[in-house]
Image (cartoon, rainbow, N blue to C red; front, side, top):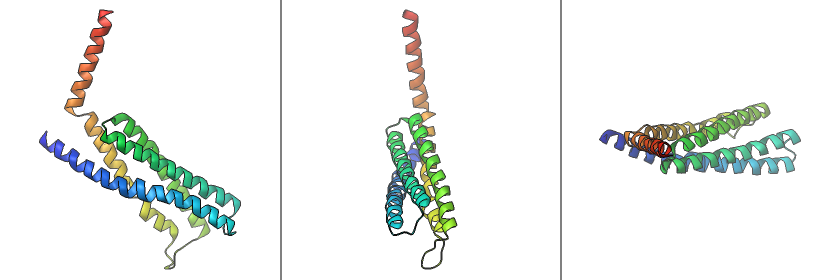
Amino acid sequence: MKNIKILKKTLKIILIVSTVIFPLFFNLLGGAGLVYESVTNYSAGLLTRSDFFSLRNLGVLLLLSSVLMLSATVLCIKKNDMLSIILETSGFIIFITVLVLLINIVKKSGLSDENLKPYSQIYFQRHFPTVIHFLVVFALSLIDYFSYDNMLQRKIKENKEDADESKK
């Protein structure tokens, strides 16, 4: 019991730190940057119309995934476990889809930085550690959901509902 409490506190610390770094900083600002850069590069004639809409939509989806993951973090801390798992999973699926599509667009265009490192590799290295956040929310929510105290509370609530139904 004591080990689980220590594990939960450690996971919550990791969750808060990883939330600030990944969904909040990298994904939210990355999504806003994609929207801004798509408009700027399209205005300068560097992007085709279809690439402009693709990048802009990917930026909006990245913003959406970030908001879903932040909501899941708040719900996880407030012990709304199943909803946090649903929001985190949907945000993570959107995020991974956006990352794969973004990497494909960047590979197709052949963009690289001043050191000739491909932007597709840079995007992957910077954004993929969001998996850490996903795993921590998932683990913390499952630990809370299947903890002895929560299972006991659900059982008491179920027995109370059964007793109320039998009175009717």
